[in-house]
Amino acid sequence: MQRRNAALAVSLAGLVGFAVLVALVLHDPRPLPLDRALHRLALEHREPILGFAAFVTHLGTGPVILPLLLLAGVVAARRDRSWWLVPAGPVLLAAGLLVRFVAMTLIDRPRPPMQDWTRFASGTSFPSGHTTTSALGYTLLLLLLAPSLRTQLGRAALAVGLLGVAGLVGVSRVVLGVHWPTD
Image 1 (cartoon, rainbow, N blue to C red):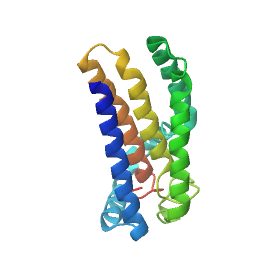
Image 2: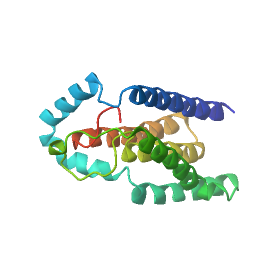
Image 3: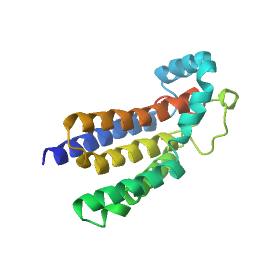
């Protein structure tokens, strides 16, 4: 029961945070002053980590996350003897990405200037597809896999690792110059 409450609290916090950002960006789609300052800082210091950022950004894509979600679903289904857990991760990811697509279409926030990009990017800027995919995907992985770990330390390490990867994906998009930090 405690795990469900924790999962619900994390989900609710994420939803509230997303709603606040949507409200800010709907009010004024231009980058916030903090966006411009952090974007400039990332551009000035990105050279030594561009290769790492290019690698990390791929960890926020469907071809990486979908197989991981299916595998985690198999682990969870075997543990709980519930076959529906196998497709649960991909289905929930797809639902979240649909919400992201609708938000992106309605908000239509412009990306940073194209001369800042080190990679091609399509669509508008908010919310970031890679960041949304990684935040949803790695959180779902955590929810599917954590109950299989016996110790609190193991679950905490899994949470730090998976959510750390999701955070790095978001940072990579800013370092690559294709998103504002609040995307």
